[in-house]
Amino acid sequence: MNEAFLMKMLSNLNSKPDDLWCKVLYSKYGRNNDLSIAIQSQPYDSSLWKALAGIWGEFQRNIVWKIGDGLRTNFWMDKWNSNNISLITVGTQSYIDTTLNVKDVTNDSGNWNTDFLFHNLPENIANKVIALPAPIEADGSDNIGWGRTSTQQFSVKSAYNSLLRNQFNVERDWKVLWRWRGPHRIQTFMWLVAHGRILTNYCRSRWGKGISPTCPCCGNADETVIHVLRDCRHASQVWTRLVSPNFITNFFSFVDCKEWVFKNLGKSWNGVINSRWQTTFMTTCWHLWTWRNKAIFEEGFQRPDNPTYVIQKFIMSIEEVSQDQLKNNPHQRKTVYIGWKRPSNGWVKLNCDGVCKGKGDLAGCGEILRQSDGRWIKGFSRKIGARDALHAEMCGLYLGLDMAWSEGLSHVIVESDSKVLIDMLTNNCKINGTIPSLVRRIKEIL
Ligand SMILES: [Zn+2]
Image (tube, rainbow, N blue to C red; front, side):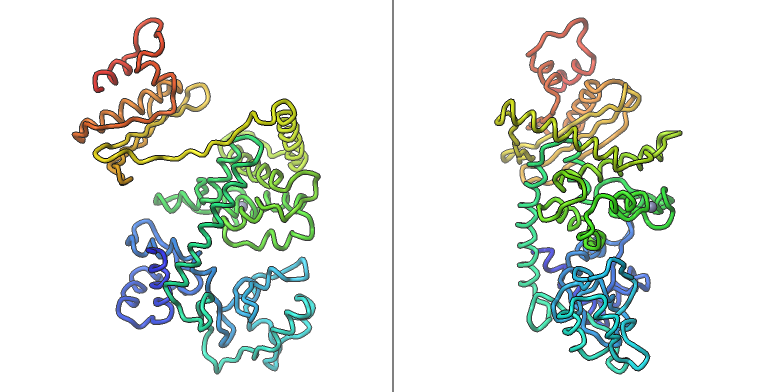
């Protein structure tokens, strides 16, 4: 509901820019950008503006352009024709210039460039385009309308319904991801990708000052998730050899990363090599990200000369394993959906975790306290001295309990994923030698 109202504000920002509150917001955060094209926020902007920027992508999917002079509307990407689709999804040529605006597709005398239209679009679509009046200056600039109502006027109800439908779609799509038979680390990686949570330079630059958002591999664009996994030349070179030619235009046309991921997780596409497209897609994304990291962090690392060969070999090994599992014991692997559950009234829950990289060169832990209504009380994540995984888990639990104690909390439920540690604390296992001092301290706090 909240998001539907945020969309209403976005709609008003565009349709009533002279209202006082719109002027205030725009002059403070607008940075002279065209708000009907994108809204961007900086880390120090107000939470309202950040929320508006966050919902922008969803809002944009629902808008349609009303053509005036044709200068602000992107010919291929925006929805502006009577079919309510982006024309890029129906383009008939493999080369598409996505910088064209609608005005660019008219000739010198101001009429539609019919040669271009019939060459690049299916006949029925091209016919629908030329049925529209060609853009002229006298009509003023292009405007946006709301695509979810017949009047193109925004309504909160229609926005709410569109958000609701998306939620159901997403639920269904996640199952496709979790049902995949392959390494868990690739599944969780894809989950992060769909949420835009892998640490690209663009993402890092929004958190901290002085970090460049530029792609370290090509230096040509901001390193967003979709850039590093699809548009950077290292990635696009690989994809053009894997995606079947029928889908290639479509594949590169998605602007929203989540949509791109879900479209590729679905069954409707296939690739050049003989395996399920979902597997090829996930495995390739994961390799691209791994190679990008190695290129940055590992001195002397060389990207493979034949990346598609490496990926294909990897896919074959995944498929062999999953077939073996099916043959030996078809019921062996069961997916269990887990999630955080609220503690009962009057209790708080402490979740803690510790991780350790390699042979203990780097370790960190995190802990978070939440109330019975799910609200955040306090949390930390921190680097700790290099030790081992168990030590990191102990640190997490100890610091978390210490935090709860200093907050004066007495009814605490603790969740940890380290069975060894819990067994040590509940005297379920024998400890050889001296009891680790952190275990002793944890017991004291308990
Ligand atoms: Zn790049």
